Structures are given as structure tokens and as C-alpha cells.
Length: 205
Image (cartoon, rainbow, N blue to C red):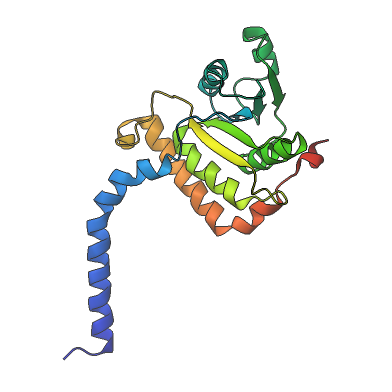
């Protein structure tokens, strides 16, 4: 008959065996979970998050041209490879507001929510890279700007070619992005309370 210590050892062995068996299933489906993007829906404005490449801007312009922005506006927020000068040079007629003051995703999400409320907008189509969308969506649920239940943020795929949600580990850039986002998601969950107090729109003035 097993004593208490032996029972715990046996239970741990079983738990590790189950975990080991679940690893392949988890890895195969992790990309699908990490990719929280959805099909574009008509919204008040289009938001192009910073931190990415020109592909986010190109995708934002495509969505604008397709009529997805009710107010005919693209908000470019955060730091990126493109900036206001780049937009003026390559897309001089593109209706944009550029603000690079937010320095991370949490600040960008709060900035977007404050911007929507200040202008009496209700929805935004947010363009970002697919593996970044889960964390951005998580932050959108954590960061509250007053009673923002009437705000609707829809996250849309930037269209980057290196992403494959079913075989993300086969591409070096994709695999690196996934590992980085995993660490950032863990940090976000561990310190979720901190993100409720990220900078507001007023702080940037």
C-alpha cells in the first residue's frame, strides 16, 4: 500500500505524463490562439498600430479604400518604421492623424480608446501583425477608460507574408515573434493591474 509521499510522486508522474502528451497539441494550436484577428467590419476609423513595418500602413490604406472607415480616417499611433514625413511623401492625400508619442502597446490601446471617446466615435478597425493581436486584444480588455463598454475594437490582420498560424515555427521571423509575444503575454497577465494606469491622452498634451 502506497504511503502519502509515494501517492504524491505517483500523481506528479501522471500529471507530467499528461502535460507531455498535451505539448504537441498545444504547440500545433498555439498559433491559432495567438492570432486573434477577425474579418474586417465597417467601423468609425481605422487604426494602424506602431512597432511594425510598412505592411500595417499599406493594409490600413487598403481597408480605407475598400470603405471600411465610416469617418474616412486612419489614425497612426505609436513608434514605427514609418512616420508623418513618410506618409506625406508617399501618401500625400491619405486622410491620417499621426501620433508617435505612445511608446508601447498598452499606451497605444489607451490612446486609441481616449481618442475614440474624445471624438464621440464608437468603433475602430485596428491593424496589427497577427501574433501581436492576442496581446493587443488582452490589453484592450484590461485597460478601461471610464465606462468604455460602448467602444468596439476589431483587430485585423496586417497581411504580413511571414505569418502562418498553423505552421508558425517554420519561419524564423514568425517563430521569434511568437516567443517574444509569449513572454509579453505572461508579463501582461502577471502585472495586469499596472496596465490600468498607463498614460492617458491628457498626459501627452
